[in-house]
Length: 277
Image (cartoon, rainbow, N blue to C red):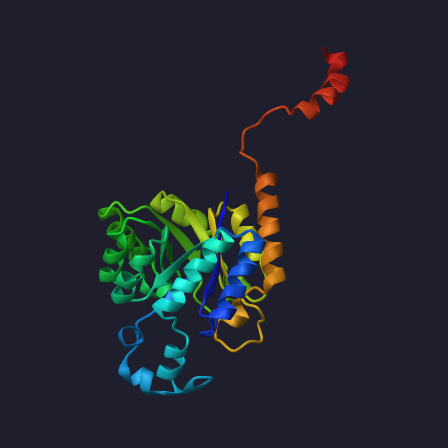
């Protein structure tokens, strides 16, 4: 089955109750997991960037906005408890080594390398050393850069899955380029999924499954009009419900590729070919 992750990311806007509601949405939809993002803000961004102006609910600088979107360990303990109650897995994409090490205490099943961090060798080595099944997004990356990242995971014998992605938020549909899924599968001989950031649509995800994607990741939100840079590239609850429904239906339609004569065909075969026997 296609592994479906509902990417909560930073769409919780720093509110644990919104995060819980999004977890509930993902569990009700039948997703396999939800994902969050974790950053040590001072290590991911330059001081000049953090000091630059940005109006947000938390203040007037980029630092205020970035810190406002970060959950504490106490918050993640609540998330961990809520996910267990909803019987859905959760994991993170950590954007720096300190965050990756800090979050080990939760013993999540999976890791995620964000597209932005695919070229961060030391972080990749930290992730790979854990030997958890790791999803690697490949947005804004060349085949050479992807190959380098793959070699790091292989060096540590860390199981992984690449994810085709376009890192534009939101992604223009004409840039989906889903045939890259097959390109990556042939070149790296591994499973390849799709991480989508398109506007209010799940047709690209369904098409990705048609082309053999083994996992899907889609940002979700309670309401696309909420504050946040990722909201417009996210699915609202009913969109997520429909996507999961259609992907599971498509899996049945695709079958296993083995040519057989179905029992339901045999009466017609007997009737229509009887004269040829």
